[in-house]
Image (cartoon, rainbow, N blue to C red; front, side, top):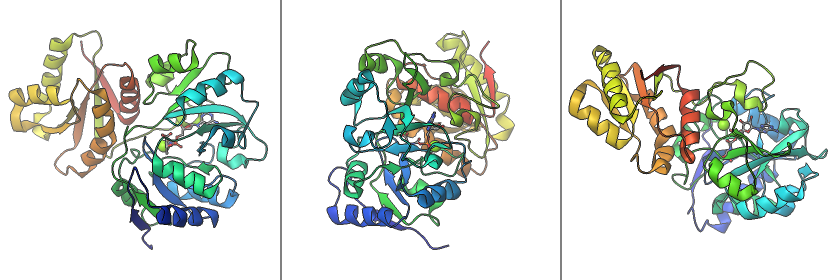
Length: 359
Ligand code: TXA
Ligand code: MG
């Protein structure tokens, strides 16, 4: 398979020549992987039905799981969505560009395949100079799911895109590591009160400020409920972010910090024959290391004091788990479900094959 052209680009001041070339690829129906502030996206001209079908094909994504449409302005939103309520426009004028995706009524002129056949559409305006300039240069909305093979962790570096899709996209814009490392917050704004479909960098606390109203955070947003069919968001019925290894999430239950640590140590100890891996905060990793030393492989995700750091390293850690040859089982620490921590726990619950609860 021919390799995609990988072109390095400055994340803050992207070279205009490179942006023009990428826009040209999209204009002629090609696929371009590009950085956003959340994760890398796999972009196609949203109005080119053939190109959009190709996105589903190369990602091996089921056709009923809709894509997010990326716009560069509030004006462009009206080319893909209709009947946008005023309170939503007001909120978006505050939150955009940024990691907030809203689900609205799909404009009849937007190809239905983008929305997996639904009459709604998910739209966002990314806060990454490369993504914004690319959409502006094309002058049209860009349909873009995360640039990974369906079910794999989302890519936070161009290398991850190459790993998954290198042979099947036309161009990859490499602007280094993405800022948040976790996908945008998806909010259904078609009901009277905004409802979180997928938690992300904007936590419920920030959303309430943005919308000026209470927002619903249903159990599936935490990742504690799964669906066989007809979920509120099609993505909810598919397993996500799964590493190739057995991953066990160690839930906190009602344990306090010190009994949780004891429990974690005991669980790891019981598996020490298998050299288990531990995905955890730096602080927890260091505590466990003092107790169990080299019996465990440590994948440190960042300081417990900085959940943004943990979020940014999460998908990379899940990918590196796959490269740990001597590891057959991994355990993950549970973090506090506040702010971006809600999104981290949602992704961990979806990535894990099993869960144990501290008792
Ligand atoms: O941060 C992000 O959102 C990244 C970057 C590239 O922008 N994109 C991303 O797209 O994560 P994707 O396709 O991997 O995830 C889109 C999510 C899926 O869970 C999908 O089910 C949901 O949004 N979604 C899309 N359209 C929807 C709709 N009309 N109604 C409900 N959920 C929708
Ligand atoms: Mg995705």
